[in-house]
Amino acid sequence: MDIDGIFMKMYEWVLAQNYEGYDPYDWGCAPISRKLPYLLNLFFSQINLYLPINLRKFWKIKKGTSNKSLALFAQAYLNYYLVSKNQKLLDEAIKVLDMLEKNSIKTDEGVGWASYYFVFLRKGHLLSPEQIDIIATTEALKAYSTAYAVTKNEKYDHMAENIVREILSEFVENYKEWTYIRYFPDEKEKIVFNVTGLTLSAIYEYIKNINKKKDLLDLGVKLMDFLVEHQNAEGAWPYSYFVRENRYHYQIDYHQGFIIDGLVNFNFLINDEKYHEAILRGINYYKTKQFNEGGYSYYRNPKKYPIDIHNQAQGIITFSELYEKFKEKEYLDFANKIYDWTVENMWDNRGYFYTHKWPILINKIPYIRWSQAWMMVALAKLMMARREYDETNN
Image 1 (cartoon, rainbow, N blue to C red):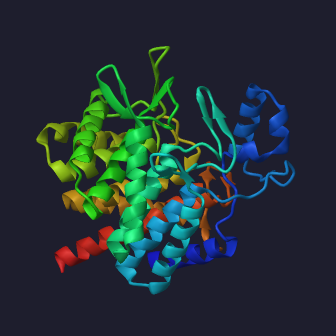
Image 2: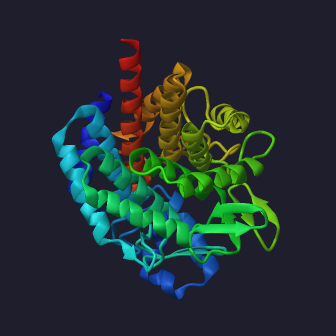
């Protein structure tokens, strides 16, 4: 099946689910989780994440709608519409954006979203349906900025402006000589590096499509400086930094792609050569250390298994965007290679991608956000890159 057929089959599957589904981290939906101590909840959340048998009905975990997935689906539909001119995708994107707006959390400064419809708890890190966080909010900014570019509807401009105000007022943090983005407004103990990369990409989309604000350009430069400073000699970034402990935590996975995307996208606006070396070092590490030449990504480098669909999707997104920015065919070729491997090994003809693949076992649970939303964004990005290549070379 070609990429158009796969995308539309995924689209039909998503509509049939009415945007509701399970999430790999939805242990917080289990009623029993409210009675267990932190360490037991952490243990069961890992079982819930990796077990290839779905026990959610046994645990009375209900399906839910993720705001982050809605923002990702809207992006996927809008970007694929730009390639296909399929009107029903544009109509559905508008419907999803309306759903997203209804789920927004309005503040005195602007508007934001909670990514999770359940409680997600990690050390120094609590997210809940009532807690605005940067990952859903930045994906929403990308979606509304793209929607304005496609439709020129002023309400999307207005929504994007409100999101920008929220980010500037609630998420920008200054610590030591660093300027970075907090995961959620009250986070103080931990710095998560990839959310600064996500914010750079979101600001890029806003500036490109709506408004080239000087304060956003100035902020973007500070965020780029922060990320470059914390890149290691190999070209990778830590996942987080614990402030009180003065300690870095490394988790080398798809989050590296978020940071590369942010640096590449924003530097496309300012074209400052001082960032080129760090960007190329990051790309080289991502391509040669995190991916096998055959097209699959290591789970968390150097740990190979399980092969994870989010890693695969992010690889397609990053290398597709690298081709669009640099026009170097090797990036498009590698995006196609990741896509080919993923379809051959993790695609289900019922209309979704599997989550995890081990040498013998496959986790076939269809997750609405982790698998479906990210892969639909990836396919849309790949189609845009292919179109760019065809238009340039024909």
